[in-house]
Image 1 (cartoon, rainbow, N blue to C red):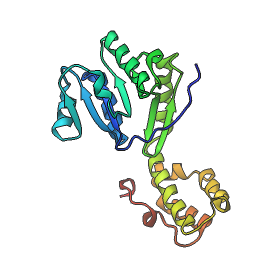
Image 2: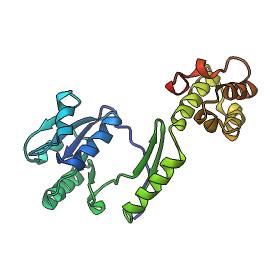
Image 3: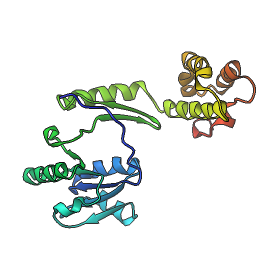
Length: 223
């Protein structure tokens, strides 16, 4: 099977997780990070989920799953150790045209979750189409070592520069060579090494006056 790669905007979308164990808790954490409105249904819950509920970050329903729980749901994750229940969730979601992921059962999913490297706005997704999760994990670890936290700062800086250059009515094509030059000159490495003077010199070389690191971005990395 060939999967269609896509990044979903789930901000304020109603998402359901069935299963209150450690696996369900991991799925909830990712959904929350992406801004979803999360409800968890299970006869029991981990301490992590209970604490999230106490803070008002998620809703818990301490009972068994019912088909009606999918009403107005955008996405559902089945994270239980009950195979029959997981299949019911999958069938219900398919009938209602709801996005569905059943943990460790790619054949029962309408989408699968890749292994992810997350560096702020940099998101690298790795998928083996369900063939080898172990290899996907190995690639994730390799990429985490290659792409450090400096890439979070780098992208925030690039975004600030892009906003300044293109506002108002700027033409992105007219500035492509400048952005390429920033990247080719090793800006991420300068950020990693906290070389503020070199960064400012490069920004002046490429864009001229008015482009200084501290005026473009605020970050604890250089304090």
